Amino acid sequence: MTKLRNFFNLQFIYYLFLFSIVIIYVFYTSTISNIIIPKIVDQKDTQTEDVLFTTYKEYLILPYAIKNINYNYSDNIVLILHVSNDQNLTKIENHLKNWDGFISLSIFINITSNNFEELTCTYCKLISIIKKSKKIDIHFIVKINSKSYSIKNLLLFKEPYICNNFNYSNDNVSCYNNYDKNIDYAKRISQYPINILRNIARKYSHGKYIVIADMDHMFSKDFHKKMLLTAKRELRDNVTAVLVYRIFEVDYKDLKYGPKNKKELKKMMDNKKAFIFHHYFNGAHNISKLNEWFSIPDSKVPTIQHEELFNRYNWEPQFVSLSNIPYHDERFPYPICDNINLRWTLCMEGYKFLIVNDVFMYHLGLKNKNESKNVNKAKRYSQAKYQKALGKFRREMKQKYLKNTNICRF
Image 1 (cartoon, rainbow, N blue to C red):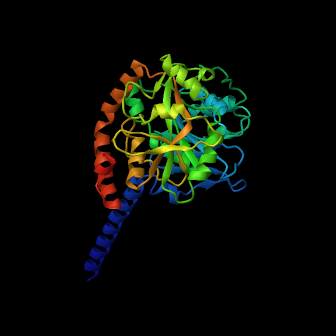
Image 2 (image 1 turned 120 degrees about the vertical axis):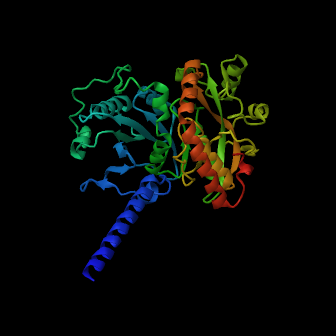
Image 3 (image 1 turned 90 degrees about the horizontal axis):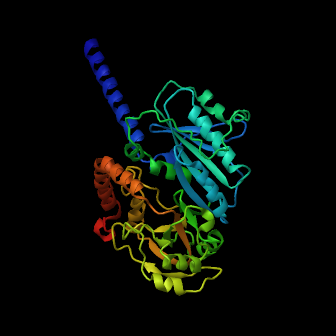
């Protein structure tokens, strides 16, 4: 009997162990929208209550690595941005000049050594860039490939003295170490966790309205002030609609040459200095009734031109929304449908896409051939992961909304 009892006890322990492994796996592989957002467990400073760090998958999340003043919940459209620390971080200056609201920025840092020089470098570089600006929160998403690190040492980068010996005012200073020359640029960008960054920047923002953009996206003059008034009128609580603005690209990389209003934009388009974004890839950003849009006089509170139907799979409308819209699906890899999957979800939920008059966004600079070549190569690296993500996404959408995904063209 004793042997039999021991046998069953061992079996119980064995199955309990397997069950625990399954639970851990489910938690680890769940998307941020289902797990991190409602259930995140933050480590906090006991004196300041500031969130110090948390972990998610293979990433260490350092929210508010740079934190500024609180802002009014209902009087701000928070600009959600993301970037990797191997990019030109001085582009942040453009947003500080161009955007009148608050900014929540996620920065991806891939650490390969135990001394965290890249982390310190990035932090000090950012401090030198934002200077005394009080309208931006910056969050670090750190991929640490070595497990032999100390959280205490990691958090030393925020000590007041740490940047005293660093001079990162030079725009050409990069904080990225090219640690593996065998990994080409296209493969590296295909590993960029873009939707984790977007979702983290959203989670640690506190405005009623958000706009999600990229680092080279700039806005027409008074965009924030005008769109905020329109949002307060159109986006009542629980309204299933988003405010879509048109996006263009200009043949200038300096912000001071960007179009401030529709009149300047039209002149640039007539002179072939501005195009619908991006003009080499038709369909993704085309919106009907453009000539009518140009002919409508500007106003202090932009009106709704019309509702655009979601009638093609590759339409990627840019919009202002309530902050409670669904999160990006993290399973979609960069750069294949990583952004458009949110539009598919909104379409399945029955959201209306309302085209707004007057205001617009523009991309600084035209996409060059080398950039397009790298993106296309990165797509090939990400193709298998994308197909797997799309299959799961379709099945989940059908089960959740009890309708065919064909109505939203995916």
